[in-house]
Image 1 (cartoon, rainbow, N blue to C red):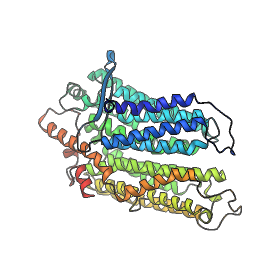
Image 2: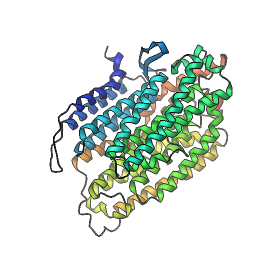
Image 3: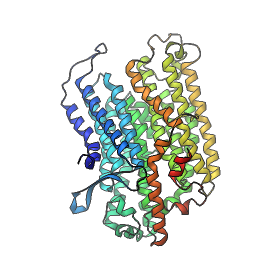
Image 4: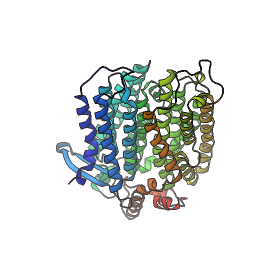
Length: 538
């Protein structure tokens, strides 16, 4: 009975936790107060319970089994064919684990917050619940509801607990992402009118009535429909030229908000392309692939160059996200299993590496109340453990071998090279862009932690506290674990590969429909035909 409702518990446990936190008593506290507020303790318990539940899902998940596991299906609004339909596959599992992991660390980092901590923790928990819903929803209407809910707590996190220009950044974030959401809503409504179904499984199943109706939509209308979804997901990633909201949101958001924004929210766009566009609009995705591949490599180069000239540490890390998400999208639109595996894995790796960097920058800001790189220097002598952890984070972001960043980027580059239509050229440009990541990350470390100390002697700079070490050490462990032993993280994706191969075999003998991603047609030069093979070879 318990196992049948694991995903519902995953979604609603943070909501229940938020409701309990909202009723917690408040008390005035100052910097000298060493105790934790009731809201902080309750939020820690809720986030910890959610992480334990995610671990239970990890151990109960069967990697080689095709299809969605732990599925729950119930009528929600039967008059419109809207169902409460949730399920978990390998990609969802990795993102669920990432969400639970980072949220717990964000709550732990924020327990010393002195301004409206109760409301802050409520926003974090509601945000976690909505992100979980996005990653497990199998009904487009349900998917959209969770997608929209995510905007609300993030808007408040930036607008209330952000820095000087927080109102501007919050409004810009909301306008950009809400515009994309409206486009997606129009696409969902049109899709339902034409097919009579909101179910992603029905719409993506070869030969199903809904998929047959989808196939009957005229090609121009289908391209516009794909464009509505693609624009919404492009804004969320974000891809150039829709990236301008990201640096402002990152810089002005509180540290935990920046970690969640970079670590999880950006992955919602990638997830949308793979979960929605890939099975429903494969031909349209293939037709648009050259454009997206160019945008991806431009983002890799542009993000790296702009990051390298930033005087603000947080803005530098923000632009690294533009570059790294370009790598992820390069993998998605290379259309082969190796690149797709790398894209999914790199999504997780980016969440860990960039989340770690935002935590570290936030800890530096807590000490000196400035993000200017020029205000630092020689901190390694005062805070050696701080410097060591920052160096590991820099190596991870630069994709040094034996760190998590290397594995995902290597698979993406290999898959991009194997892709047809100038694949080697895209891979070469991307590889050149990735060199810049080592340049700006090592430059940042050298300016902040090495060299002579500044005139003020960094009187307020100390090494990491015990609470900060509890936040950072798990991230260091993940960086090294994924870098040295990645197989357990690739293994959950084997079911996706088997499902795709089965769909391709069915598509070869059935009436062509938009459902089913024909890996064979779009990756004629793919030499490693399954994610299972990737996992075994590594």
